[in-house]
Image 1: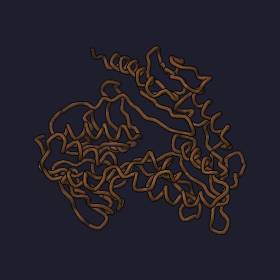
Image 2: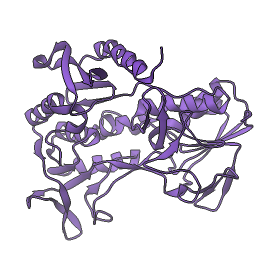
Image 3: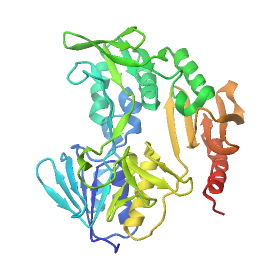
Length: 395
């Protein structure tokens, strides 16, 4: 495809903004429009469950860029206007108000939507945490409650539990895993995370699935587990995963399967690309299809998409990376972890809660996890790079 004269980015997200910035940085001089469902300009999501929720940051600090910088991008931001349909052949996006926006190249960066429990809608005291407004509303409730139950034992649930606990609220974490993040980290790191949360005062009710909410006079009163136990609560946070925002693409002709399915160039169709949490693309080096839900990938993938829009024609082959901060633990992960991997401490000492663990499957290094050793974890990342190259059959 020749270089387009106009680009439409659907999603005023980190991935959406990074796409625009990369296009301009790479010399694109055509028109750029960013369509966003929220009224807010692009902001950062990782701080929502930590600094914004705790109140150590004012909401404005989560903004990704200041207005002066945004003005230099020469992009039109159409905010508070959700996309409801896409005509892929015409490269036309239909919005909730009836507008039709067209462009020679379209980037889908609509992110995720939190999963919810049956009966959750409209029940007072029940929250999700995806947007800045979600974080602010949850903070208000946490400041006036005594007992919160966090439904979810993954990254987001564990971060919310840690933040709420440090705010002085009595916290219970519920979820089906034996320990927080067990299906990602395996026994060693997940077990240490469970110990840390317990030491700090979080009540772990893990190993049982949540089946529903208990309501009293229109407000949540507890969480029902599949073993019959009811966890009392003044506030409940539902944080057990999210789904790609692809409903508006159902009749578009794009392939949808746990995200927008793309080739190795993050291209879903001629002139249509996807970036960030919503994109499920072919990773040539790993020879697999991936969809990554983290801030680092959102930006890196957006840069790759911008380059391919402008004709660079390069596969997107990152070493996956994410981090999480919980209490005094700063955990950095490079590569792909799995709970059944062989885990070896290659730096530091787990007893000191300062170490790097290497994960191997079939004799190959697939990932490293650093616990309070970010610099050393990045150094050990090279073993993941070397193994990935071997898997991809490249020299």
